[in-house]
Figure 1: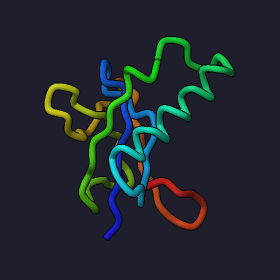
Figure 2: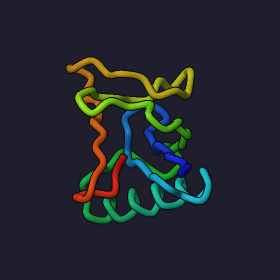
Figure 3: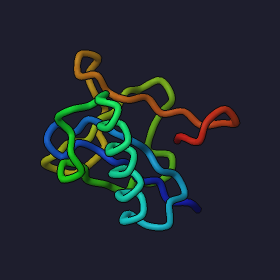
Figure 4: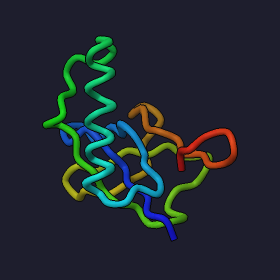
Length: 99
């Protein structure tokens, strides 16, 4: 069974990226930091640096397709986000590599 890692802003809990099948949490963290560095170069995000990114592992079948999620920073756990909190939805299938 493949592992799924969620990279998030350690200050707000906002999900930055999701890595399904990554070899380890360290590999997922490095990919997320690389992604953020590329986006910063394009000035899409200015206040998120590599030092603000953390990763958690989530068990399979944790998320539901019609729900929005964020990370509870204090508990370091994936939680359902209220509509106003701007959570992230998860999908899987042939069209994408996200979970």
